[in-house]
Length: 341
Image (cartoon, rainbow, N blue to C red; front, side):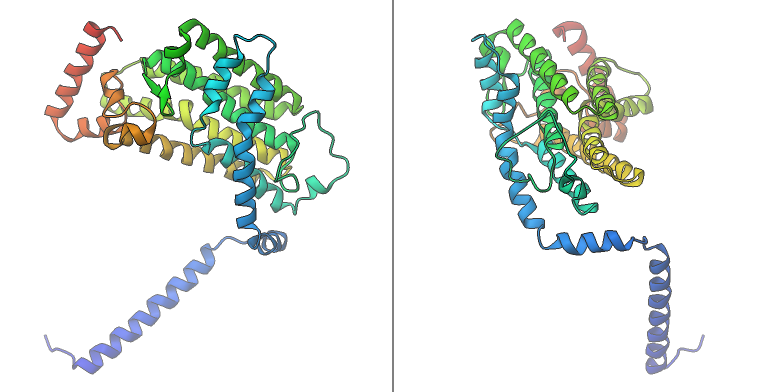
């Protein structure tokens, strides 16, 4: 084989590189999504105010625990201490922040025409909001409902899982007793349903009602088991969706429906919330092994494994070697039959 001189070889390489780059640009241009002029205009208009929206959203999120206390307010003194305790120490507040940002994004897509409309009438009012010109009261209500459903599920989950701590302090059932905590969790869900009804949108009511159904079914799935390796992982992913991702996905979908955008954007919002929720839970399951309890604000060091729950890291490990799979199977058998979980 005759070797080409270096200069000629370099020249051929340069031409080939240019051709590949040209081919890539042509393909990329064909695959690039086509946006409407309205979308491009809205994007340019909103680019300068993204930081402002983020700051306002965080300010409104900080007020959500106060909003919840107003929604749940009851004349009996036996309810207030538990709700103050449950909502007094804020968690990450990821869900309401996600909902408010998604609502502002969807409304901005329509150049905030829904908010500017003088025909907007609502039975819900949250005074003092910073995003009042970008997010409607009904959409803010969805953010409040999201945090109410999430916190109520934590009250029940901590009791079921026998967790000692939540958000850096003693779990509610450890402080107020099991019966009282269960009843308070039920009351929070009841008040969330009442607030949901005030939105007066049948589709949104139906979507967020499915979230409650998913939470209950997900808890039952967590109690189930399967001897089939592939079935176990499918059950884990489905359980993860029902217990975590469903709330994020459907709340994102609900606020985009209230924005009156097209079906493509509604489904895009749902998909974004679903994928974010799944990724969030997968990472949370990893942190259960490698995270620190002081930073997480809840039990760590393999707390799920000690409860006999096979999460993503355990299932992945069991797929690597037969020995690991046998060890996990023996451990779960021991926990289930002798410890009594």
